[in-house]
Image (cartoon, rainbow, N blue to C red; front, side, top):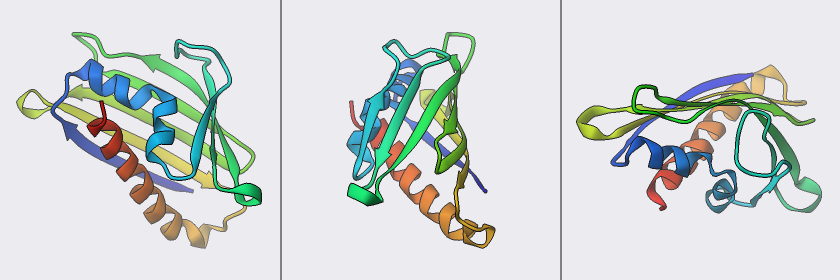
Length: 146
């Protein structure tokens, strides 16, 4: 099991950073060899389910996720979304939080716990480094693209 935290700031209003990070099909634009399939209809809310399918052919796998907490940002509260990963291969959770940052910027916290079956525990350092790299680039690109 790997747990990590990514922290970013962006010159965006809270609601725009939230929109860019939580429009799930946008993730397929920034994560190579991935497509996102919405299982439940919009709008996103607690109970929304989607699948990120990554890979090619027989090496592809599904990362099935359910939104279990959905609190868009308001003038008084930061935005917080929690996803539970419920695939056969990928398990764990992710939290995306947007809150006021320094100098009028938005601060983004992306927390994740990731388990990939059947990887043994000694592979966690490699999995952690790969996950931080992939998710870090994805967050950066999502925040940059309108």
